[in-house]
Length: 579
Image (tube, rainbow, N blue to C red):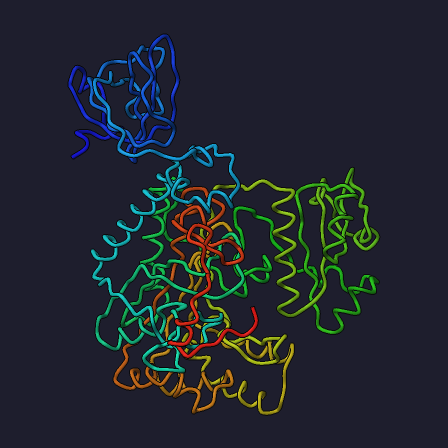
């Protein structure tokens, strides 16, 4: 072994003892014939002292040192180092490897751009913060494995090379050399496999699974990512899954984020969160919520309100506990359409002021009230965007953490852009039993060619056993109780436009498995990258992924994607067109 101790475990108990350590040179200074060098490894930093000639080392060198442990002067103690009270007087050293001049120093206050950090990722990962991030990621992974194993779950691995199935995003496809003209797909999730595992009798499955989706990227989205995936047999009530998961999540965030949260988490239905917050993933660190003012403001003579209410619109009001300036309101009006008033000294001002004169204005003193009129899913989604904007710009969070289950989503929704019915979550979600008869109304409406708001309203009457876990306004996980009746599953697939032939081609293996005796089952998939990032206070999941891609899908460190040789293309029967 090149070392007897790591840099982070040398302390006063080793005073006077000869030890051997090794690490990277991260700092050097000379003073009166002495050269002070800081060595760092995964475990910590340690100062070593050379007497006499300056050693032939530089930043980034990998150095092995033998010497005796002694105390540092008290005024030089480093409380931020585990080995900060001691140093090693060097008797012998060896350069294990040299380094070229580093493009940046691997310190937490790195000045390099993110592009440089990703291009020289091994150096970036040497930074103490990044070492901490991946230590925490390892600890969380280990905790998850132990937590679920103790509760009867098996860790099982599903295939990476699989079949292309429509799951909401584009697949990454892989040509099959042994089957010319055919392709594998990388899994967007293990969804169908884990359902089949319930048919196979494994009862409780989990996997820390790699998933792949060819979609537009942003700070919290990567083409390949990791999720905690699990499934449970003999589950018909969503609460069976929610109770298990919130215990796991609470323990993770309490241990690694100091959240001090206790189950059960609040539960709100999809309809409730859309009415109150305009979002199916509301940030409940802010208490502001929409109120229905339809009765309060309709019939008061405001043409915008009255004409829309006559066509079935609702009037929604958001009370902001801040008196905004006219300039701030005008800037909001460039992005959103609303009516408003604010109250100061008992008097209202704004374009709604004259319509609230007969209202008790006392509750709105020093506040700004925004009023919106509309109906339908796009309207409510715009309310959610407005709430996020004003909350983040004008308010401070009222607490550090807000955990929430959103449940009872519509099973189906109308795609306004494509003019078709689609699943709100995925088409393998079970509807509530009492809502199954409503499927006939959807089928009949489709035959009649209905669409738009009428079809959207009809679709949202059928609720699915779906649930999302939301933390601080971010969807961390999504799951559902699944369809285990093969005939119902085929019916739902036809409802979203698939033919009998397409169902057999794409999902025949699942339908045939369900026909072999499928127990009721349900599960969830949780975004592990996002969980770790939130625990560490990181805004981007790139900070907790070893070798992430840029927002254009480029791997800067290894230079992917890249060209392949003509010989490889010919062997696969492929030809590049364009590019």
